[in-house]
Length: 193
Image (cartoon, rainbow, N blue to C red):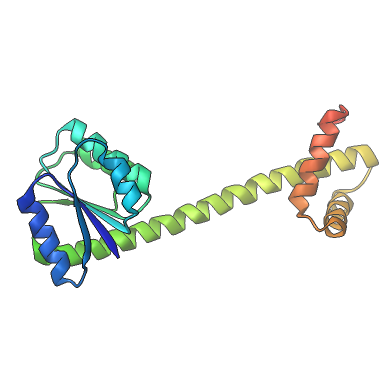
């Protein structure tokens, strides 16, 4: 597992690195949060990112949150103090673990595990949400195509759906693809709803 530590303090990075080494991780890279470090971290393709920010300024926090948005990987953020605005910004950016005053090498492994589990749980929920949105959009497309067929060919709803399904099977396509093509064709000839 490749782990990137983003830290501008050698002492804090050392604490994290020692904790990771003791936990058995050895693919660890320290990146200073300066210049084009976000692109550098992206190129390194880490599996997990640990950010030790100490007492970050608003600009530093914004840069760190850019890392979170760009990577879509588990990220644990260590800070010395915090406020509601910082916590909200970190959560909105997808930070998996936000740890205040928790920088000790014996805590690195459990926090790393927490960040990975939380990230995976959120990713599963996001995938399920995307599937539900796609299914709803497909349902709307099919319903619209059924309505066009019902009006144009005087079919019942089950018969309109049956025609879409049979056409899809005959063409080796998904029903929603046939429905979408029907809606497009109908709009082109001015018969759409």
